[in-house]
Length: 327
Image (cartoon, rainbow, N blue to C red; front, side):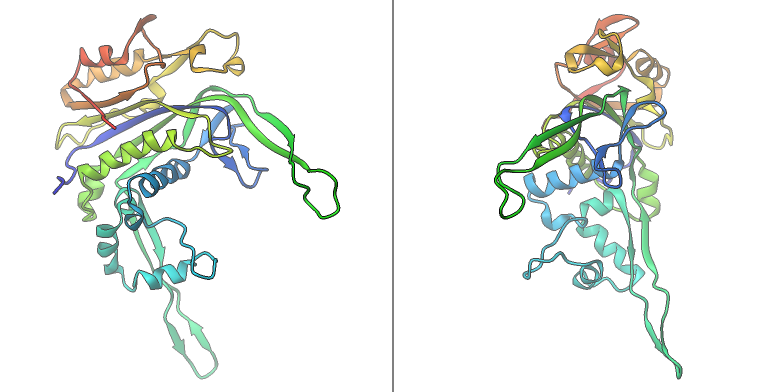
């Protein structure tokens, strides 16, 4: 049986997108999300969690262990929230233990599951009591991902072969928004105290499956809008048991050096290098609190430290034990 987590850890994940839409905004023509003030591309934590869930369902045979998923009934319609609660036999607050034992995504990310209110009869009318909800905070939390540079929004127009209506002689126009390039950094924390205090039996196996889902799930998003995403760096900084410490904001301790005149001209991973000077400095300052670092890196991502080219493995290994993530 896999061990329960006992250590605080931080996660830094970098991936890039070429000619794709990493996270469309449904209320804004499904455009990639861009901070209007800074020109930086934003990707929600929900998108990353969906990537992890889809990978575990489609590639690790974990469909029965994922709670947040689409379930299609025999009549072709999607199962509703109330139907799902009935299917899972969720009736009381105590049922959360049953759910957490069964579903890996609920152990990782937490949940809020509303219960139907009980009915009460009066002489005048039947009133529904306000329903309660089962809520717990996931031990794993991610901030929004943000690109390490300004991005360019591009509008693409094309045509379809098949006419949209009967009687038309030719296909119609298609339209979509893409980003020619975006290098995105996600930052997250695995909080062992949140797991222990809420009785969540989150295991090392769960965390390793999640890390695999982050890397391979991103690489396997092969769809019309997502094809063109590549994982570049995944790092988990694991702190010593009982330290109750973490550095914080690892994503803010990296930046890019580009060979282009402006951020908006970047079109490839070969157009930039990631500056890890501040990241290594922070790890060095607190290395007495770090147990080890888990690492996976794409060889095409280049790094600089103190204005000199360096591999991140070389920079980290001189400070701390480094363990390869093998998947």
